[in-house]
Every structure is written in structure tokens, then in C-alpha cells.
Image (cartoon, rainbow, N blue to C red; front, side):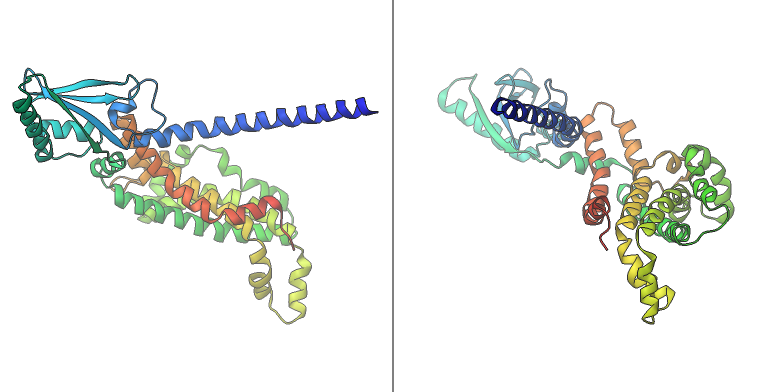
Length: 362
């Protein structure tokens, strides 16, 4: 009996260990690319092309300065080799400052660099050694890639605001129409109900680019081409179908007897819906809102076709990715800038999403 119990415990521990290994493996597979994207967005151009890629960005840059053939030799300390690597030989302090800012994310003015040169010359005068060198450390600007992204991209901040407007309008339109349709499917029985419910997903079977092309003519006739409202209408077409399915499932899980009880106590049907059913349906509405937001925020193909002078933020990021050849750290910063609003939005509605996964408690 004792041996049987021991073997059972060993099997249980073995199964649990395998489960933990699988879970940790899945988490690592998901988080590793995200981690490298975040880390890469803070690396300097010089670090971004090192192999192996640094796991963490340095907060400071260590320099060595000495006399060279053309002027002064500037060397940078390499953490991986443990040695200084010469990167520049010039007497032009403006050129040195530009190199530090562009490739090392270190902001030093020509005057500050000249002070280091004066310190080197003073040491050589004192020691009499021509090959004397000095070292110094300067703080690195970790957000330099993000600053460069917003500085070089055309219309980045207005495009960011425009994308937020489009995402908000898409949520409002999708929840208004999709929510009401979902409630109707959940509460009313009519002929063709199941077929109609399935047909709302029909539009999702077509690629976005196939819908966007004819929408150019329709939006142009309506005066909404290259307008945030026009693009939000296009995005809402795809979001409404899924919103209907999500909200219909949520409304079906809420007993109709709650609304009937409220009406017994004098509430109108509209008031019973607003005060009883709608608060209980918030988790499903939040999930639908998250889907609509992410769909509108990340969509690029339709935005490229349906905008001309007012691009969305995803289009700006896409154009930056195409034009940032040789600067993968800048592309990573653009990707992170694109992801932050979606992460913030998901963070604020996470409680409602958790309630939906855990079921509705009435």
C-alpha cells in the first residue's frame, strides 16, 4: 500500500513538473520576442548590430581620447570584448558630437568634447608623453530612438491623435450597432434568426483590401475619403459582426427574469435594460471594445488605400519601417510606440475581460 502511494505521488509530481515546463516554455516563446523588441528600442545603432545582441542597454558610454593621425582618436569601450574600439579620427568636434548622437545615443556638445580635448592636451604637457590618453564617461539618452522617430517622421503626433479618434469612433459605432443587434438576437425569436446571425460574419471572410477598394468610391461620394470618420466606418464593418456574436452570447447568459422583475416593480423596458442588463453585460462589451480598438489601431492596408494627406499612425510607422534601413533600433522604437496605446487600453479594461473569462455572476 505504501509503495503504491509512493508511485502515485511520483507520477503526480512528474505530471505537474511536465506541466510547469510546458507553461514556462510557452511563456518564454511569447515573451522573448517582446523582450528583445523592447530592449532593441533602447539600444544605440552601434549596439543594435553587435553579435550577440546585448540583453540590456547601457546607461552610460565610456570613451577614450588620444592623439591620432588626423586629429584625435575617439574610442568606445566594448563590454563584450572588454577593450576600447576606435571609431573616429578627426579634429572636427562637431563631427564627433554628431557621431555620438547618431550611433551612440550620447548627447555631448562640441564644447563639452573640446573640454575633454583640453584635458588631454594638459595631461600631455604635464607628462610629456605624446601617446597619453584620457578616459571619460557620459550618460546615455535611452529615449533617443523615440525622439528621433518623432523628429524624422512626417505628421507623427497628428497621426497618433487621428488614430485615437478613429479607434474611439470605431468602438462607438461597433458597440452601438453590434450591441443592439446582439441584444435582439438574444431576446427575440424570429424567422431566419440563425441564418441572419451567421451572415453578420460573412463580411469577415473578405480581405480588408478587397473591401477598401470599392469603399474609396463610396467614401468619396459621401465626402468622407481621407477623413477619420470614413475610415472608422470601414473598420466598423468588420467589427460589428464579432461584436454581435460576443454581445449576443453575453445577453443570453443574463436571465430575462431580471428584466421582468424590474418591470414588475415599475421600471420601463428601457430602464430595466439600462439599470439591470447593461451593467451585467459590461465584460462582453469590454471584450468587443478591445477587439474593435485593436482592429482599428493596428490596421494598415486599408489605411494606406483610404488616406492620402491624413495618414493614421500605423501608416506612419509602416513608412518609417520601410525607410529605416540600417537602423533596426529606430524601427523597434516605432513598433513600441505603436504598441503602447493598445497596452494602456487593455490595462484599463482588464478587469472586465477577467470577469468575462470567469463568467458572469448574477
